[in-house]
Picture 1 (cartoon, rainbow, N blue to C red):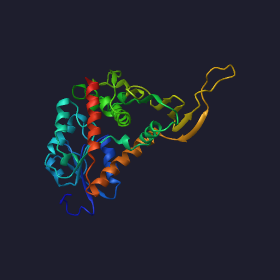
Picture 2: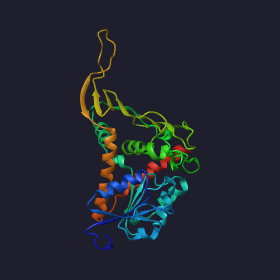
Picture 3: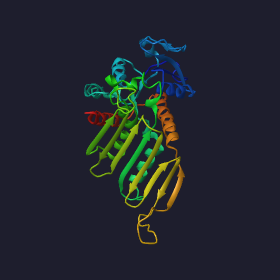
Picture 4: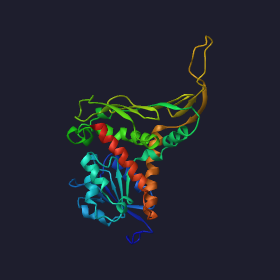
Length: 329
C-alpha cells in the first residue's frame, strides 16, 4: 500500500502529541506493545522531562504513526498540520469542536481518510457487544429505556482548575466532549440518528468556567429513550440500567444482572421486582480500560498490516461529532 518506512517490518515508530493525563495512559499502552517504539512526545512549547520529548513538530514526520492526544480544541488543527504526513493517524475524540472544523474534516479525501482513526474506544467494549446482543434478541424484549450514570469528583481536585478541561473559553462543553461522547457514540452506533435530544449542562463546582455536569435525553423514532447523566462534581458512580418490555438488565458493582419475567407478583397480586434470571461479572471500569487497549491494538494491527481503515469507521465518527455539535447549539 505504501512504500514507506525502513525497518517497518521490525517495529512501528510512534509519535504522540500530548504528554499528560489521557495522553500518558496512551504512552503507557504503546510502550507495553513489543511491536512499537515511541520515538517522540511532542508539545509546542513546554520542555518535557523525557528524552523523547520534542518541541520540533517536523520530528513527527519520521514516524509510521502519530497519536493526537492533545486538548479537544487542537485536534482538527493538528490533523490539518499533518496534511502531508504519509503514515497513520490515531486521533482522540472528538475530531472537531465546531461546525467549521467538522467541515474541514469532511473535506478530507478517501485515501487520507483510510489512514485516520478516531478513537471512540467504547466500540470495542463488552458494553457494545451487549447492546448488539439485546437489540437483536428477545432476551428482555423490546428495549424501552437505557439509563446511564457515570460520575466522579474530578472538578474538586486541585489539578482540575488549571487544566484545559476547566477552561470555558476554549472547552465550554468539556464533559460532553470528553465523557458523554463515549456513550453517545455507542448509542448512535447501535440505534442510528436520534429523533430529538434534550441537553441540560451546568457548572456546579465553580472551580472552572466549563460545564462540569450534564444530563441528556435522547429519543429514537423506532428505538428506546436514552437518559445520560455525567458529572465531575459529585461522588463516584458508574451504573447502567436497561429496561425491556420483558425484563431488566442492571450493570453496577462489577455485576450484570438480568431480572425477569415482567409478570412477577407478590402474595397480594401486585407487581414486584422480578427474580434474578442470570448473573455475570461485568466491570464497567475494567471494560473501559480493556476497550481502550483493544482500540489501540486494532489501530496498530492496521498500521502493521498497512491496511486501510474502513470508511464506515470514519463516517460513524463524523455522525457522532455532528450530533455533539448539534447538542452544544
